[in-house]
Image 1 (tube, one colour):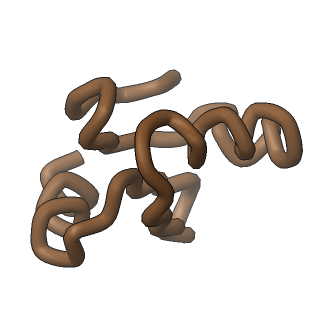
Image 2 (cartoon, rainbow, N blue to C red; image 1 turned 90 degrees about the vertical axis):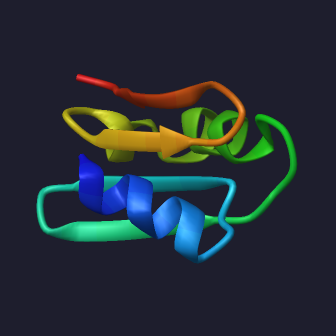
Image 3 (cartoon, rainbow, N blue to C red; image 1 turned 120 degrees about the vertical axis):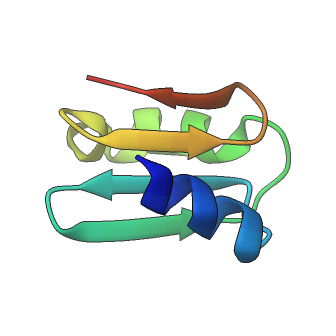
Length: 61
């Protein structure tokens, strides 16, 4: 979890997701990234760890 929080801050991203060994970064404002993911790629969030500047740093099981 610390890894994706560090990536979030160092890369100035709005959202970072780690699912298995893949890391995804996003830069849209507000909750746009999360909204788009839920609508277009909901499986990407299943079992993933997520760090987001809008909702705070947390894990999404």
